[in-house]
Structures are given as C-alpha cells and as structure tokens.
Image (tube, rainbow, N blue to C red):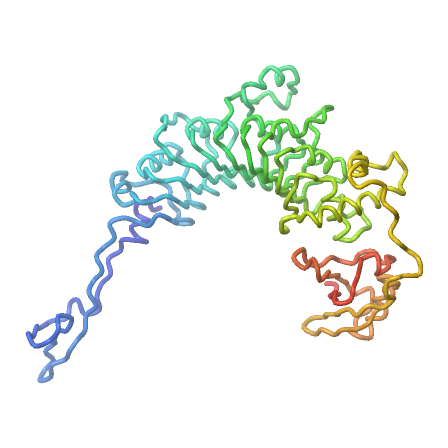
Length: 459
C-alpha cells in the first residue's frame, strides 16, 4: 500500500516525458526562433515546435485530496513538510490509516492545516499515547464512519484545543459515554448499569459545530451530554437520529445545555407530539430549524401551508424553517392569526400555552367569513402528467377520490394506480405535497387558479 508521500508524488510530482525527447540529430539554426528546432531526416529537414517544460511543483495546492488511495502510512516526514507547506485542507477519507500517532505526525508536518477528513479510515483502535500538540491549528475534523470509541474521542479533544467543527456521523453511537466534569456529581447519583463506562472530562468551549447525523440515539439525555461537553455549540445536526422525546428527565429544561444554539437539524426524528415543538420554542438563540419527516406530520390532516403556519406560530424565535427563506414579519403575523383561529373553537384543554400568548397580542379574532361570499366554486388548475401539461377548470368541492375518477379518462390510469401532488404557486420552493387523504375536499388545500396538480403512476 502506498504512503501519503507516495500518493501525493504520484498525483502531483510525476515527471512528464516529451514526445521527441530522445529523437536523434536535433540541430539549432540561428535564423529560426528559439522554440523551433530542425531534425535531419535523410535529405529533408523537418521543423518541430517545442512547448517549454513547466518547472516542477515545489509544493502541493492548499486543498490536498487523496481519498480512496489505500494510504496506510505517512512516509518521510521531512519530505511531507517540504511539499505540503501550503496545505490548509487535507482529505484522506476512505484510506487504510490506523495509527493515530502517524496522523498527528502528519498534522505536525503540515503546519498550516485547518481541515482534516479521516472518514472511513480504520481508526477505531484506542489512542495509546498522543503527544501534546499545542501548535496544531486544526479547526475542522471529519470522523464519519470511523466507529471511534468515546475514550478515543476524549483523547482527541484534549489534543486539539482550537477545534471548532467536529463530524461524528454514522458511527453507530447509541449512547454518549462522555460528559463534562461539572456534571460528575449528578451523573454519579443517577448512574445506571449502562453508564458504567462514562468518562468525565473537561468541557470544550471552542467547538461551535457538531454533526451527529445517522447515529441510533433515542434519548435526549444523551444529547444533553453533548451540550455539557460543548457548552458553546452554535450548530447541531441530528438528522436521521431516532430521537423519541426532547425531555431528558421530569424537568422541562430541554434547552438548558444549549444556551448558544442557533441551528438545529432534527429531521427524521421519531417525534409525534406538538410538545416537542413547544420544547424547541424554549431555545432562546435558535434561529434556523429543520424538522422534516416526523411521524407527527403524518398524523395531521392539514396542508403543507397550514402546517407551516402552525409551526411558525409556535416558534417565535425561529427565522428560517426547514430550509426555506427567512420568515417575513407579514408571514409571521398571518401564521399567528391563523393559529388563534385554529384553536379558538377547540376545547380549552386542547389549547397550547402559546394560544393565550398570541391571544394577548392579536386579541380575540372573528371567525373567517363563511357566508354567501364564497370563493369561486371552480378554479383553473394546471394538470401535469409525465411531460404533458394541460390547464382545466376543477370543482374545489370535489374530494381527492372524485378528482382521481375524473382524471382517469385524461391520463388513462385507474384511480387506485394514481398519485396526486399539489404544488402551491406561492410556495414552490417547498416542493409538491402529496394529496394522501382520499375524502379530503380540494378547497381545504387552499387551492387557487394558477396552482398545479401533478399526476404520477404508482410504482
């Protein structure tokens, strides 16, 4: 297997051979330009133009990518220092590195390096004795798919004092067996047999961003340990983690260990209650939130637009939701007023605390007018199937099943072989919404002229 030095020499320092470097009898004529030579070929003289050889590289670029090269060692460190003096980002993903001392020696001989990707290397073995490394300026470290144990993570953190971004995704972590020392007494009092290997360590206030995607963690108390370990986190990505609750214990201090958190990704969590959203509202600095693909959304009989309104109204601090644009003041006011109307006819025991807060702001609202001034019964909608689009008038009081029956002749699909997706012209950036409820009437989607319905065949 090649060393890092051999891999980068192969990529950046292989000498180029010139086509006619070994041609015989090259003659120079003073009446020709410098880049012309003459080759004597029998009785003829042939002219050749040569492109000057580029001077060889003395160092590699600032971004060095050597992923999937079977690298298992570093090679000569002095040559690495000489050739890699400009390197700031190093990608060594999917190689065969297994010795952490070797990794740290690489870092020491690349003094400017700030980003290192070691994903899918064989680095799961414990770190025996790492040298102290106060001169290492590594700010971002990617360790996805390395299955590093928590003792190893602890040793790394102790040796990387200025680390700001850490990726620990896809490492099959079910528990977080590491915690900051200020929690030692509390943890000792509540320790369970599953927590006997818990390591108490110091907090790491320099870390601002943590990616923890795809780890099978279910309990929020494990995430709270990350909060104690990294008390100044500003971005936390927990996508595809099957978290079932946002309460660590009987207390409701979900936000307690994340005082600086501004971005949180909880997409594909296993959360099925509005209580989780109410917990998120307590994160005082939270501005950017992703909560896609929750079981809660599958249980609601409301449109994508209505659901967004309910979310915005419950989350007064959030400025960006599910990757959309910044929530405008007008959109927030509309959402809050819709929220008040949504709950004002429901029993008091079903109204969330946020309802009373918004009632104080907007007052008691009159129900939306529903008299003779009804919206148009028919609206003009663009129907799209495969590459064909056609505008047709549709009765908004039809159910989804009724509409499928009417579309059967248009597209040649039976209703049970058909899927419909509604695309609101004013919210195209959020994509189409599947019309999954067969008995739901079209007007409940707030459908208007100019909107689109996409027809798709079930696979």
